[in-house]
Image 1: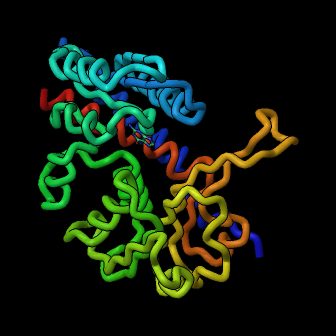
Image 2: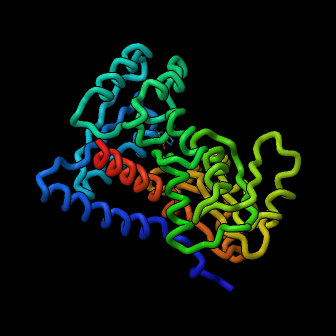
Length: 294
Ligand code: GUN
């Protein structure tokens, strides 16, 4: 049987949230307030990063935000980048900003992240925001985990008492997701297993999962035989696969073998059109929050 009623439409949900944000911006502006302003720093010419940042800037326009894209050569020094971060920290016209990762090897990403004013850190990567998140305090949640939480919430997917298995322990997705899914909150209250490259038998772990969150950046890693019937599958992967028949010469696939796993899943996110659009929307939500509290 072919099913489509179990697909989480991240694009549609993200459009709904964008409409809500746009309505709030209209109210702010009608009260004589400045619209929220997001800045993005992009270093070098990584095609995936260029595409993500373009999508972030385009989304700002859609909801009535101001946006500033600052592009720098790949050989910018760490000192110059720190100077730029400092300027944005001090710029009262900018509510929040991001430094698109990854950065070139000669730049210490953590040093740059730690230089960002936590009150403008709309990516939620600064240790102050990560610490607050861990303690359940108000903070900027990192965009991808925040987007996933929104999806689970708005699709009314029960998480309490469920077993959530996360694949990948990155600072951006896996680790924060493990914290959010185990917290005492509406979306949370899971028993969490965080699997990674040293996990002995990922398949055994995954087969126990009511909720799978795949975030390793390895195409089609999660296959049908690793998934329990009725599991909720959240696919964070955005992998470019060569495809001579595709217009751009590649197509995007997730970390989950979507076609094979779809019929087993209670819910599943597609790639593209799943977590990706929600990530951008979460960044907008954080920027609106930064504007309100600035
Ligand atoms: N690279 C991949 N995902 C992200 C993100 O959410 N924010 C930034 N700044 N860089 C990224």
